[in-house]
Image (cartoon, rainbow, N blue to C red; front, side, top):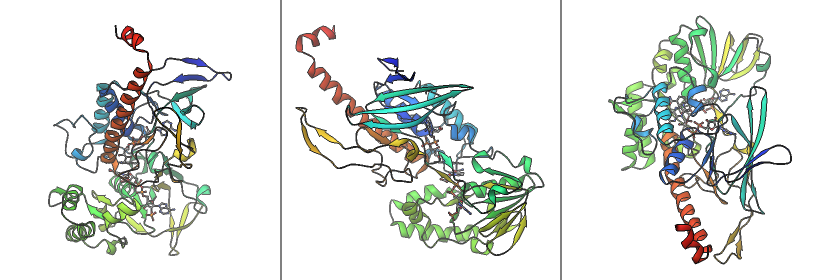
Length: 438
Ligand SMILES: Cc1cc2nc3c(=O)[nH]c(=O)nc-3n(C[C@H](O)[C@H](O)[C@H](O)COP(=O)(O)OP(=O)(O)OC[C@H]3O[C@@H](n4cnc5c(N)ncnc54)[C@H](O)[C@@H]3O)c2cc1C
Ligand SMILES: NC(=O)c1ccc[n+]([C@@H]2O[C@H](COP(=O)([O-])OP(=O)(O)OC[C@H]3O[C@@H](n4cnc5c(N)ncnc54)[C@H](OP(=O)(O)O)[C@@H]3O)[C@@H](O)[C@H]2O)c1
């Protein structure tokens, strides 16, 4: 850790001055920024609430998970995936890649420390980041003080648990998809999977492969595309088409090709949204489902598609069409949300300092993050706020977006860092500058 002063305050809280940015989150985004900073020789501290790197991948994903996009779109800056890795690496392979990445760049996060609050101190123009660490029964608090704060806590920090009548009193097991590992323990059970995003589809497929009886709730509409079209990744194809054609036309082409390959999904009870898949993703952040076998199971009747839920009662669920199903368990594949609004308090009345250190202008109060915990400024400009604040991994563009953010942020921090060093050197009188160089 790079700190030149470490002391306990009046309340027994450890205070740490960080000479460089504090990065919150040791997922792919936090690791990517750390690697780029390490390469420039810039010190940093990474704070992670869990006891490992990439905790989403290690602790909150199911066993059968593979990357949905080809590996070239998922690698972090500076290190390609090993050549022997398949086109779609498994979760295990991805975690091994990330572990090696952290080792290569000597990234050692402060594990088991959860950021409770981060505030910009107007008076000294510094960030005050408070964490709580609980190991067993021992609880300790630390306050990090720094000039730059990088938010890398992810778009999927917490699971959405919807409020549905009777859900709390449902007598069977209810879990969120983040806690689902495998269908093994659900063998022979009737399981209601709520949601039909990539998680809902894949959990339903996994349940069916383990001889459970899944019913998947599709309450509105969703785009389902094949993962590959004529042997080429659909994502890759879309990226290629987008360099030549407008988005609406690429959408049309993708839907026609999808229709040829997977047929009309409306006949299975799955409505397509009126906006095209890429337009919907761009404007509303809703990810299309890349099918890896669930549609086949729906076609064969192994996965039952049902409409929205009205209420739960005892061990059954009533659907909006009046149908009542008896079920043993519920898996909520209802998505995720960012936790940034719970801990980041950023109301900065920024005052721009000129070179002669006088206040030249004063900007109005700024709120960088919206209520949903995503930067207000849309991609590609949502990575930099004011007062040394940065956001990585909030572009709704998966790992490729996280890498792009990391490169931009680390370059910017590098520039600021060099500028500050120059200013510091300028302030040292000439004779002392000579002394310090020797
Ligand atoms: C099931 C699933 C599968 C996915 N598959 C793909 C895929 O194949 N390809 C793809 O591109 N994307 C995929 N994604 C999206 C995925 O979220 C990102 O690709 C990637 O994990 C984002 O990295 P990140 O570092 O931004 O966020 P995360 O991986 O979520 O990492 C954030 C880290 O911050 C930590 N943290 C959160 N809050 C705090 C706090 N207050 N204090 C301290 N630490 C905190 C978390 O513990 C976590 O370790 C998938 C997502 C899910 C849920
Ligand atoms: N292998 C992979 O690459 C992989 C695998 C899984 C997930 N992921 C990624 O992880 C992210 C999250 O995916 P996700 O599938 O977990 O979440 P998601 O895409 O946000 O989907 C959530 C689903 O839950 C439904 N839902 C929410 N509340 C509901 C309610 N009360 N009743 C019925 N349905 C409800 C939504 O329906 P509405 O649309 O009607 O709101 C939607 O179908 C995405 O970026 C995804 O691509 C990737």
